[in-house]
Amino acid sequence: MTELISHFDLQERALGDLTSFVQFGFIAGTLVFAMLTIADRYAPSKVFLICGLLGAVANVLLILDMHTISSLLVLRFITGFFLAGIYPVGMRIAADYYDKGLGKSLGYLVGALVLGTAFPHLIKGGLDQIPWQSVIIAISILASIGGLIIYLLVPTGPYNRRGQDVDFTVFASVFKSRNFRSAAFGYFGHMWELYAFWAFVPVILSTYQTYHKFTELNIPLLSFLIIGTGFLSCITSGYLSLRYGAKRIAFIALSLSCLCCIVSPFAFQLGHASLFIAYLIFWGAVVIADSPLFSTLVAKNAQPEIKGTALTIVNCIGFTITIFSIQLLTSLNGQIELKYLLVILSIGPILGLVALSKKEAL
Image (cartoon, rainbow, N blue to C red):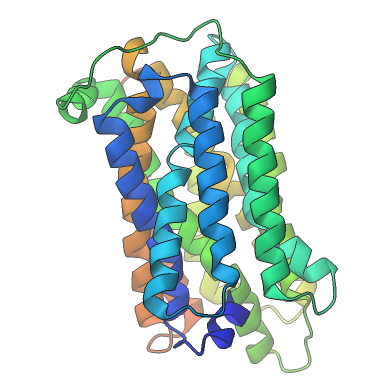
């Protein structure tokens, strides 16, 4: 991202804008998908394929040299729009295959999302001086292959309940269930923290280097490690949910990530880089560990015939929330020291914990 910003001679605040416009596109996509109940009316694997291919095309067009900030933002928006047919539809596919053990299956699915998020950092950090354009091309190719794999190898699952009609009241109806609201609000608090943390991982590492002049860090590789460790924590939390329940494990993970936010000013004072990196790896693990469990709770407490749409709606609202946290941190970065700024991310987990602490049996 930093090289793309430099290549097109953009202002530093473009980092937040380019990230947020993906979220804007995703929100618009989920709104359209939810209103038209696409995830429930059509074969999920076909929706996944089409959106994977179209999203890849929009992504790879970033490498053209004729772009302005406006055209870059439009392409980021389009990419985000078609992600609405990937992430929530992927969860719908998993829910179509599992009645029991959904937490475990979504643990693997969200773990794959985490690796996908971290993978560009690995490509950049693993190959010295690789052009940013090559990273974009590689990721677009992988996205297309992913769509083809789902379409060719994953048919409609046995628990699929196909919806028939467009339903413009679905936004209101899904929140009638008290248990559904509790799960959804917990997820919203989680989302306030998650994507802002991911977006700022390289900035956090760079800031630590600034505080500790003789420290040299491989920021791309460490960013991959910090974000990518969530792959293992998602799988682990999925298995733990089978024994202890999704709500309990989600509450523990959200509490731990909240604690990481709160202690961040002290963590930057750690003189040994290895301790600071260990802290960030732990944060990277717990910040996402609850995500598959919230999706499990949402899916289990939604009406079966609108399960895909319910997941899409919750994703829509969750990603709307990420825009506010990302833009807030971007606008305040420089005015407030980053080590104090990260404490703001604890607001979401605190409110999410309040939602989860209600006595309903999720």
